[in-house]
Length: 291
Ligand SMILES: NC(=O)c1ccc[n+]([C@@H]2O[C@H](COP(=O)([O-])OP(=O)(O)OC[C@H]3O[C@@H](n4cnc5c(N)ncnc54)[C@H](OP(=O)(O)O)[C@@H]3O)[C@@H](O)[C@H]2O)c1
Image 1 (spheres, rainbow, N blue to C red):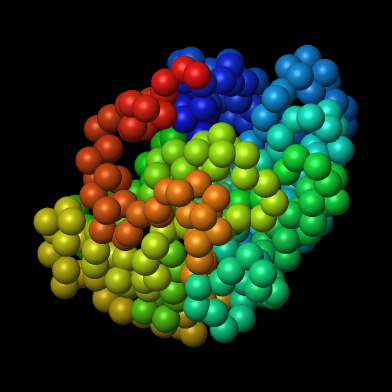
Image 2 (tube, helix red, strand yellow; image 1 turned 90 degrees about the horizontal axis):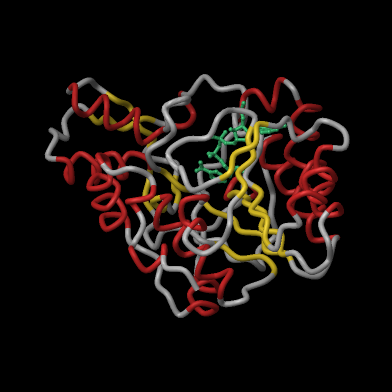
């Protein structure tokens, strides 16, 4: 996201690890739950826009450490929202895991029913941000992409096993609407610039199972399909309960921006093409243009 924003804004990136791949960005290493840190940063940086991505994203860890999950996923966004001046726009990145019901293609008006502590605490984080009123944007999604190298992403793991021809079991009863993270960031930037506010779903166009996603990726990369085997959520040895239906409907996003969300094959093709590119070179040139 910092790379997408860098051409248009002066970006200050904050994480508790060194950031990566974007030399145009000023970088700060901070533990965001340290008392006083949000207020300090807000008064120093005076941000026009904050895209809040930090979260405890390991679902099983959230089940084991619910207090930590609550602190980071629910309370931290609320504290940040209250620390910001009213004229700043706060963008809260949220998740399809707030849903646990029937679906498919959940819309913004559908009642959330999270199954996991991750989903519940992220939903509480949304509510904390919404309580601020004024200029906020809550964006629910599910993305994939190349990571920083510090943690292996799901898509990176899958590319690796496909390249090696190793067997991989993927759920054929868990449905989602994945979007390539670069497609997500470009569209989020457009949404911000079109003045979008409130709750918005921004995900891929196609509802696929994890198993179908693996097969699309294998086909696009020219790898054999046989090692990709179907599995069931009911066989997984996880701590956190998972929903089998996570697909999101992005119609409101498309109405607000006039821009379509990409289909699964389109996103995967771009993901594979971007592999050897630096982070900044993955974005469409128009995204980097200064206003
Ligand atoms: N990946 C997806 O498909 C997906 C789907 C839906 C929503 N999201 C949302 O998108 C956002 C980014 O997710 P991601 O997949 O990129 O996850 P990620 O790699 O785990 O990124 C979250 C980052 O926040 C950092 N962080 C956590 N607590 C912090 C704290 N107290 N102070 C400073 N930094 C802290 C994490 O550090 P540690 O690694 O040390 O914890 C990590 O670098 C999250 O809000 C997530 O809920 C992601």
